[in-house]
Length: 310
Image 1 (cartoon, rainbow, N blue to C red):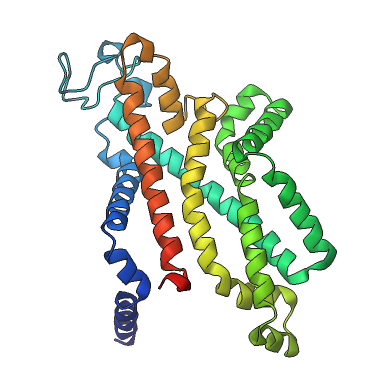
Image 2: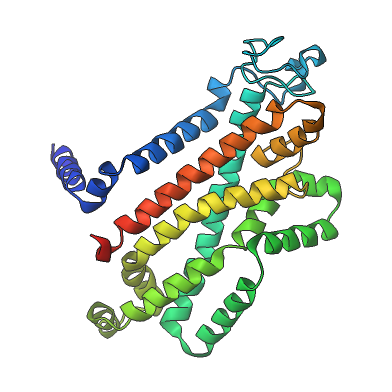
């Protein structure tokens, strides 16, 4: 009973919060949230919702290859968005590919958050030579585009291991490469917030009672700088998905046996000159809709958490 009462109070406070009011007052943000939720549901439930299993060779037939969308002549409603040259259903491939793109995006954001938050906390709290070294490394990395850093990391891994071994661990390589490309934003933002927070009374009181620097950073400082982290993570999710799609389109990302949206676009682009436009168009639209919706949510979250705009 007490648990239900506590949940009711929390729900009441959440419904009266400025963030919730900002969300429900913006029709564009609501639309972005609906699109994002719809894509998440369709992709992560693709094994249950997809009309076909597109990457199981036993279910494919070459006689079904290159069918146009169902509303066109020679189309088949068994394949609403058409098929590719291997007879794979484009709609099912998009659902499975979007799930893989989101897994890569979310995992790489987690990696970059872990690295950036750790280095930002240490840099801002310790200061001195440690701060100078970490920030100079960050400055050097900022001079290179994130996609170039990811290409460099992926190229180094390819040079150290065989092609077959690389394909086996390609998912982890691409997650690490993208994650190492975006940590700087977290580190610089957290460092600035920590330098402000560490001089406040609650941090000084924690030092007086003998808490260790690590405990102070994690238990007291970090919870007070989560706002900027959420904003950066939301925006970086869209950037990570775009980066993965770019790498896969260039042929240095995920292999064809693990097709993401970028891989599907690349495979469709090879047949574009033959007139099979649907193979690359529909994955491209899905990618654009996903990134646009996530970026709109990131922009709303940035404004909603900014006290100067309330």
